[in-house]
Amino acid sequence: MRFGGRLVRSERQGIAHRTVCAHVDHAIGRLGLSAARYPIVLYGPLRLPPILPHDLTLYAWLRDFHTVLAYLLFATFLAHFGGALFHGVIRRDGVFGSMASWR
Image (cartoon, rainbow, N blue to C red):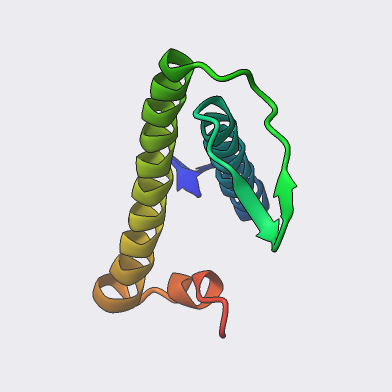
């Protein structure tokens, strides 16, 4: 992205940032399920062991944190989608071609 003629962040760094955010959000969700003592069944009798002690206060905090991270990740997606549509439909400046993965 360019801001004032300067390169602020490369697209590769942006993709890596979104990937890290998605993995952190998944890990927070897994920790919350462990704190709630919710069983995670992989297949049949195979279950993931709990990684945190049973604590409903910790579960409530992790659930709220997981919700905030999920909304931030979704807002990031909407901002990028809106930017792609803006360049593709309104500006028609050729930037959409570099944003669209199928082109």
